[in-house]
Length: 563
Ligand code: ATP
Ligand code: MG
Image (tube, rainbow, N blue to C red; front, side, top):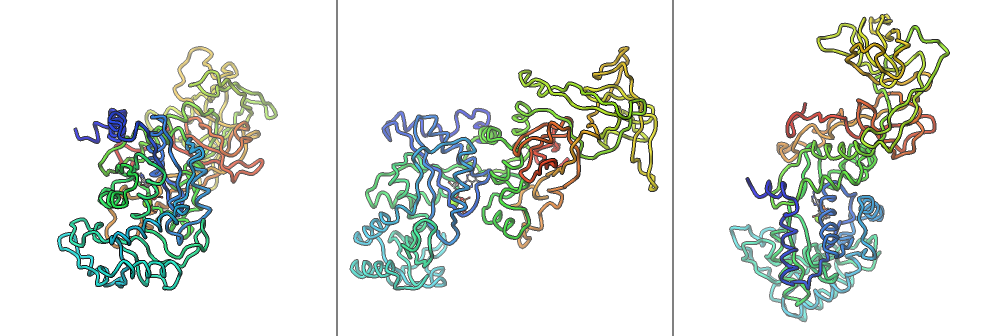
């Protein structure tokens, strides 16, 4: 058993919890726990971020500490206020509260400049004018040391002057950078005199035109953590190789020093977690927006009908490890199914309608039957469903030539209409093309409520809606966004767009019982025997639109294998 599996079976012992417990015991941070979630506001949050959010906020909560929400807004070109607001909304929706601790990295730009100046004065930073091409050559490769920049040893006075002129806007973008003076021979390429500041004449969503130099992530992030007195700075595995640099800055500057801890990011099958790729899908209109229910974004999942509880449960189940892996989408679907099973009301809805006519039921007759709202929760009570002579049933619940063990409706065969009565198929009506357009049947008046009057066995039970009362609606049925299980496996040169699943969205007309048709956007239902659905904001009065959140049963045979 590898470490990852061990952690999964005992989530209480994951290594981040262990580190924090040890630090609390040794008094490393005086027993304090302060974490942060630091998104860059250059896109919407996705399910991968949810893993980080649950960990950052979760660890703080568990130890009576606090978690800061920090916009890591060091790159003005890609950032936008729209994203900032969406991030706040999504973290809140997921169930977390940062209290007064909402910060912007850009609020620290002044202090960061002071740190850069301090490094220059210490002889540990210099202005470098290498071109992008020269830069590559001077940097070297991990197995071969880099070369020192010709300006590496220019005087402190000259560096101070040049850096000041960089800040004053005297130079164009890319003219020069400020670099740390560390070690051009380090086997860790990130230690080879990394860039601290670059020139960028761009307006910033938060600071406007105040700055024309912007700090790099590596320089800024540790400082942000330090200024905020973070204790445990939890980030994803790719930053492990940056940690020596994180530590170098804080040690060299003599600043308060948080502990960086790295964990494996979430990768989910049949989807992408890259904000850049998600942005492309949105911009190119390949999906309907960031909140398209096909998207792995939190707003997409929300619109699709996912609950915050189900996403938190998923993050709990996947645990936290040091190993990059691919998590099966089926696991996420399992979590939402479990949660919706407990909380959603059962109603009847038909997604592939076929007319059923009860020949011995009066044409103008109608009555209502009692239906259970949620068998998992008796306190949810019951509601009444209208019934009449003409019903809609599911096409899949009828077979003219039934195969073996088909216990639903077929000529001569008797089934139970859920909650209503027993009916026996007497025949069909076909169109010119020979397709069945109507099924005829008779009902047993003694079977009202759906019970067998003489104890005779009726094996099949099907759902239905009354044609006269049902509300016509649009059903949006979703499937995996991509046809490829692991997008990292795409051969070189193959564009990820080519792997988009054309069947990820199928729109069909359907019918629902009246009680579901009046529900407000966001309401979640189980359509009996069909799946979990949520009311989409596109719904119009009298014409509901439903998103299928997930089917009732797992459609995956094994881990990741399509059914
Ligand atoms: P970018 O490429 O823009 O840096 P990012 O996915 O790293 O994208 P950030 O906004 O920097 O996005 O992420 C905020 C936090 O969420 C970071 O701490 C990051 O490590 C974490 N995070 C991002 N993606 C995942 C993921 N797939 N699984 C777990 N954590 C993630
Ligand atoms: Mg990032």
